Image 1 (cartoon, helix red, strand yellow):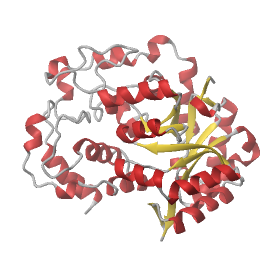
Image 2 (cartoon, helix red, strand yellow; image 1 turned 30 degrees about the vertical axis):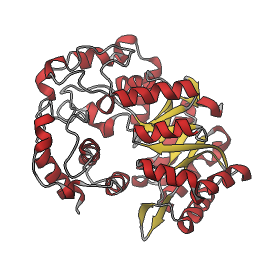
Image 3 (spheres, helix red, strand yellow; image 1 turned 90 degrees about the vertical axis):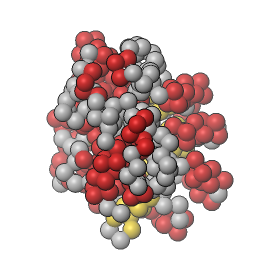
Image 4 (cartoon, one colour; image 1 turned 45 degrees about the vertical axis):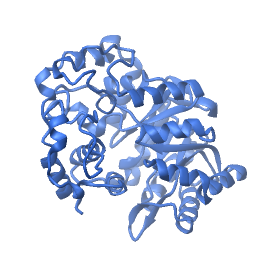
Length: 381
């Protein structure tokens, strides 16, 4: 296993991390088997955003034998209320939820105290100026967290975090579908300027974020590196071709400032697929040739989250709504994390008036109004 320094935290983290989101589906023996296999392979960072007490307890029991070897991303603001996950800034809920996390993880601290899921610029400013961040600083002074991190899907929020100076690392969603956009509106030139290790063809805001993190020594840990599995399936990939886990992970790890990819593991076999990255050949890692050689017609009708559809007349962030809908549709049941992310949007698909004005700007012919209607059915009002 290769390791990278997580920016200014100074922590040495494994390139492959343990995303523990799916362990709620497993019994204790399965959770322990995955945790032990990951540890034995050199994986040393685990993300625990989950608020479900049973999940936290199962993870705590699994990593307890090697607790000192693990770097834990523990989230602040992820709570369990009335039997379900709720993201909140209500301190009467935040404080006991974090104390519960420490207790169930069988530890007195986590290495990375993550301000949980901030996707709105105004909310970020409120969090950093109010009692929530005062609590985070208190945890830091008490040694209950060693470093302050932030999780977000929004590059504008992440850029503000870099500029703020008090955030030491960021958890951010990274994969080719989220990053890449048309260099022009001509679909035939979609990957015309793409370079293997460069940023050509990338959403300029995201490119700016990666460069800013690199310059400020802010390490990035990655979520959604496989786009919920969508990139592994040619029928569901916006590119019309399937990438391998190694290619997806390599893509993430070639972005500036990226240090580790949290892989959502449901089995030891999936772990083995992920860590195969460490011994893969250059040919096996080559995602660029696969994407550049993708059939041009495959992009048509598929959202690549490029944002060309904006602005929406009622203020829907169409790319983000589509992103959450696609992630949800990849699973037999809508994951609670994705459902909560969707519901936290200022404007959801419910607001769509079906004007289809956005469709005239989409270079890929996505039936956006129809997509908004199906998304409303998927998540409900």
